[in-house]
View 1 (cartoon, rainbow, N blue to C red):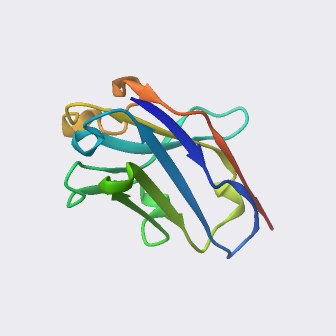
View 2: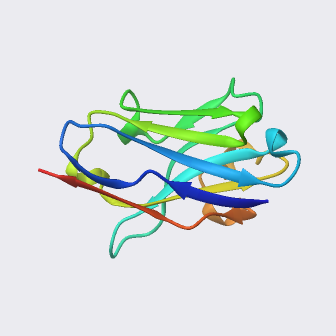
View 3: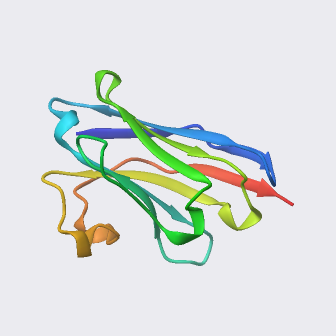
Amino acid sequence: VQLQASGGGLVQAGGSLRLSCLASGNNFRGYFVAWFRQAPGKEREFVAAIGASASNTYYVDSVKGRFTISRDNALNTVYLQMNIMKPEDTADYFCAARFPRPILSETRNPASYHYWGQGTLVTVSS
């Protein structure tokens, strides 16, 4: 599986962006997909994840109620809708995938993912 993230850009605080993660390869619908972010000088941080059926989603507390992860398996794409954005959301955002799904305790661990896309830069101005 190859992943390509897009949709980053510059937005004012309070604004919105939607990131996309387009996957190539077969059987993407079975993959567990996550978004991570990394700000300069900081470790890569889990943001959100979605299971194969899209019925299970997971979020870091700091984005709950503001970000929504979703997927369209017909388009081999996972989205991250980001609303009410804050300057602290500024980072490079990466999508990652794995199969099968991780155990719950490993959902937020970057090392448990097998495939990564390139980053897409999100900058939120105050």
